[in-house]
Image (cartoon, rainbow, N blue to C red; front, side, top):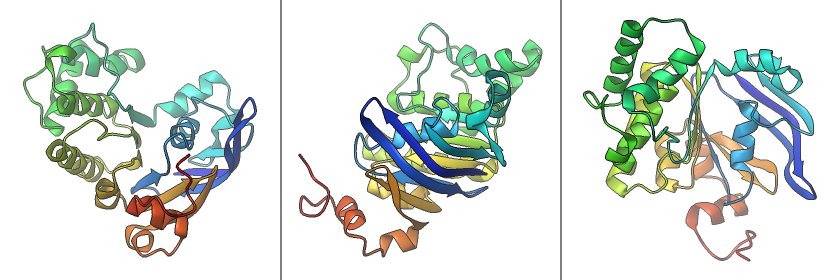
Length: 248
């Protein structure tokens, strides 16, 4: 579904991606892990074309999106939904208007059809009946659910999650993890999740990739990652201060 081939990206003198090679399997959830500020969100933005690599290829369904013009890139982006870290809802719009936004922007559906789709997506994320509420009236977990409903409004094939459980308590974290898994199954999605939460990593991920010093240093099934002897990966998963990862 998504394939990155020798992708490099720098910001001025800071090298962030240093030859990324990664294949995202169709119909599965891939979790990308790594230290804070290590380039995970930068990598995610390359997948959807928000950033272009300095060199290398970003292939979506076999098309190198790094070489597309803006019009063709916008067409490719219709395959994607994205749930941002803080849900990124429009504060001036109610829940109905937030979820309807991509439908009004990218389709010619009538108001009745849009309302029906919004109601269906809210039901899918367990939030029926909140259409008229404003984002300020929602809890953090509810905002994440509305953000997910908006991300799947256009029935995308791929959904990208940027730290979906950040700032949530353990119970709500578990609820969001279950929701990601259920949504992936029900809509037959290819999902990419950025996460620091070790428990979430192994719960939602069919495949896990470790990003370190601008490269993917380990990639495999949850079981393979859990049993890996890679010292960087072991230190990250255990949270130990001792090991090759510097805390300075």
